Structures are given as structure tokens and as C-alpha cells.
Amino acid sequence: MEIQTFTGATLVDALIQVKRQLGEEAVILTSRRAEDPARLPEGHLVEVVAALPQAPRRPGRSPARTGEARAWQPPRLERGGAPAGPPANPVESTGAAEPRSPSAARALPAGELDELRQELAALRRAILDPSTPPRQDSRSAWSPAHEQALRTLCGRGVARPLACALLDELTGLDGSKVEAALIPALARRLPCAPVEEPVPGRRVEALVGPTGVGKTTALAKWALRRDAGHRRAGILSLDTKRVAAVEQIRRLASILKAPLETVYRPAELSAALDRLSACDLVLVDTPGTGPRERLGLERVRAFLRQLGPVHVHLVLPASMRLEDQMANLHPWKAAGADRLLVTKLDEAAALGGLVELAAQAGLPFSWVGTGSRIPGDLARPAGRTLARWILRPDELGGEEREEAPAQAGLRRLQSLVAEARAAL
Image (cartoon, rainbow, N blue to C red):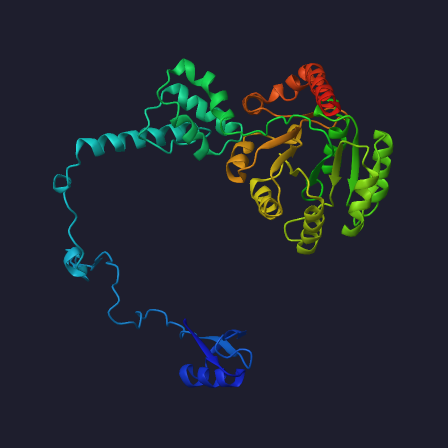
């Protein structure tokens, strides 16, 4: 079937060209309006795709095309046993090149042969054990402990290129030391925001992100954390568009016994902050906004510009795909997000995605949500803690619960020292 494309100023012009070129038997396949930048905005072009069907082939007839190479058929034997048909040597009749003998093949150098043997061995291991990802850098002298560590990292959700790059840094270690070196190596790739000293005055922290990621729950946990360096936390809600959002935040603030201010327009921010002057920490709850909601993003940006928060925490769940995390990251990072608050660590199948999220985002982790308990299940992360949770998910949240009393006492002492300095 011969397919051609025709364009014209109108559909009639295009059909006239089809009839002229292909005749009356042409079949119209598609037609569409094609914009022509040279003709806009005055006009456009019409594109028609037509085809000329081939005539049905009669049985027993050879193809009509000339010069087409035909496959050799075995000779037919006549009654007398003499072969009939093409010559006995099909290579001469078809003009195909005679195959080279193995001795005529080029001899490979020893280095290339060794490299081929290593690649074949890696392929053989991958076939025998499908769970074993192939090594990306065959030049690295890895031990069996490195191979086992690669399987562990990939099984915990770490992307294979990152896992290979991480293990390439540990090639000089003995097999017994590879496992112990994994946690500090992962910790170096998981930056965490430092714990800031409490300062006199009011601190404003904003939580932003898409819908359903746990912003309001994280805000409630943060407000109840007495080891977070604040005496009294207030809530400033900008979420007034979602159905029943205002009533929900009012009930939550009543349970938390925290003062609440709901703001509908940027002009109301100054008066709302004045009414929260007794709070040394103001947590801003923003409406859930997706990366394609331009009006919603601009509205939240306008509030943030006027608020001037100390930090803007982008809230993302650990169970979200990396592609979706990146789609939400870029617009909020342009709006001023400088921290990552990762929630729902307990709902993620694997936590290795935190490594690639940190690598691509370039932002430190401020808080992590390890469960749904209020209060509790919110921790200030450390690189080694996150690395240990990635490799040993059964330990998730255990250390934070054990160290909470000690951290609470330390934060309370720091708060008292800051008050004394302010009084002096």
C-alpha cells in the first residue's frame, strides 16, 4: 500500500491533489487541520493522508516488482530423478557472500577477552539469580561483600546508580568492613537541618505541599513537641478553600489548646499576627496545592511573601513516587521552600528513595513523621538515624521514642537560658 500526504488551503484543494496523484481508487486514511506558523493568524492548512491499495495478487503468479531478491527454493525432482530449477549452488545464484571460516576471525587481545569473560560471568549471575542487579562499573574490584551490599541497598529502595556509586567509594575496604561502613556512607548523602538555638521573639514556620500529605497532622505534632524550643505555639491557617477545612482546624486547635487565627486575604495577616503575639512559635497551615494549580500556588506565594517565615517546609510523604515528589518540589522550591518534612515513613514499602530525593532536591530534612500518633511520631532526623532506618526498617521510630525525654530536658534548659539572656 502506497501512503502519501497532501496539503492544501482547503479540504477540496487537498482532495483534488489526491485524485490527480493517486486516481479514483485512492483511499482517504485521515484528514486534519494543520496550523502553519507562516499563515497564522489569517489561515491554516488542511492535511490529508491517502493511500492507493495494491491490486490483489493472482494465485500462482510471481510478484510484479522487478529487481526484488527472491529466496532460493530447493530443486524439484523430475520423474527421472534429475533436479530441475535453479543451479545447485544457491550462493552463486543469489550473490550472497560465502561465510568466513572460524580461523579467519580476528584474534581478540587478552584484555578484551578478560573483559568479555567478566561481563559473561555477571550476566550468568543475573540469569541464575534475577534479584541480583548487574554491576554498572565492571572496572571496580568488588568483593562478594560488595555484591551482597548492592543487593541489600537495591532491596531497600536505593536507586541502582546511587548504590553503585556509593559502593565504589568503599572498594578499598575488606569484606568484613563493608557492612559497617554502609551507615556512615549513606548518612553523608542524607543532609539534615541543624537544631537551631531558641531565640527571643516570635518564629514563623510555614508548611506547604500538595493535598493529603499530612501537613495539618505534622503541624499538630510539632505544636505539642515541648522539646522543639518553644513555650507556646500558635496556629495561623490559610486553608479556607477546602470543604470543612476551617471547622477541622478549629477542632484541632481546641484539642491542642493552641490559639488559632484564620486568614482569608493577605491584608488580614498583620492583624492576625498581632493577636498571636503571646506565642513564640507560629505554625502556618497552607491549603494543599498541586504543581499544576497555578492560581493556588500564586495565592500561597503572596501570603508567604508578606509573612516572611523563618523557614518554609515542603511536606512530602515517603510513600510518594520520586517523579511525583520532583513535580511538587520545583514550584515550591521556587516559592522559597528550604526544608523537607517527610511524612508517612511507616507507610512506605522502602525508605531508600530518601537518598535520591535528597540528591535531587538539594534541601535538608527538618522533620520526619514515623507514624500517626499525636503527640509523638515526629522526629528531628539525623543522617545516621535515617541511614539505619533505611537498612533496618524494623528499627523505625524506636530511637526517637527512647531519646525523647533527654531531648525534652535539653530543649527546656536551652529555652530557660534564652529567656534569662533576654531578661538581662
